[in-house]
Image 1 (cartoon, rainbow, N blue to C red):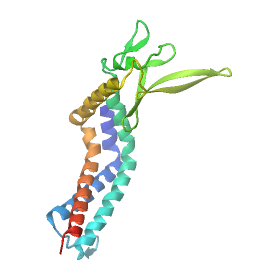
Image 2 (tube, one colour):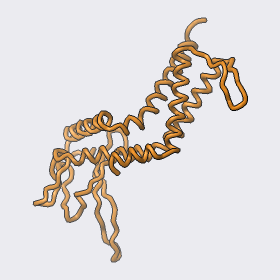
Image 3 (cartoon, helix red, strand yellow):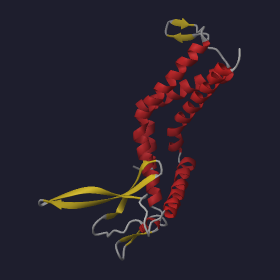
Image 4 (cartoon, rainbow, N blue to C red):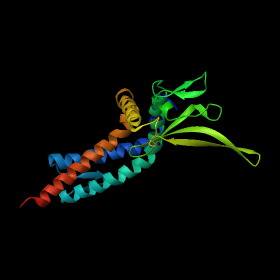
Length: 223
C-alpha cells in the first residue's frame, strides 16, 4: 500500500473517522474545562436539557470518556498504523546506504550487509521486512523456503539486529537507529497521514495529563 492509498483508505473509513472525531471532541472538552475552568450549564440532548451542577463530577466523567474513546480509536486505527510502519520502513530499506542488493554476487550490501551474510539463491533478498519487536529490538525478515517430505514450505526467517558479533556491532545498530529516526521524522514532516493518526492520541494525552495534574494539585494543596 502506498502513502496515497493509505490516505484514501483513512479518509473513506467512516467508522475510523467517527472514532477519531469522538476522541478529539471529548479531549478538547476535557481540556477546556480543566484549563479554563469553564462550566457546562446545559447540554441539549434531543428534547431534554441537562444542567451540570457538579463541575468536578463532569470532569471525571469526561476523563473516563477520553480513556474509553482512546481504546476504541486504537482498535480502529491500529491497522493504519501497521500500514504506515510498512511505508516508512520500506523507505528506510530502500536507501542504498542502509540496504542494497549486490546483483553480481547475489548478496546484501550497505549497512545491513554487515548483519545479513546470506546468499540470494537461498533467500528472497529483494523483499526484506523490517520489524520492531520491542523497545530497542529490531530484526530483518527474509522470505525463504524449505522442503519437508517432498513438499516445499515458505516462511519468513528473521535476523535479530541486536545479536552482535565481529561484523555487526552495537555501533552499527546505533547507526541503523539514526537512519530509522530520519525516516520516522520524515514521515511526520512530509506526510500528513502520520499526524492524522497521531494527533488524537497527542490531544488525549495532553487532556489526561492536565486533568491529573490539576486533580493532584487540588488534592495536595491546603484548603
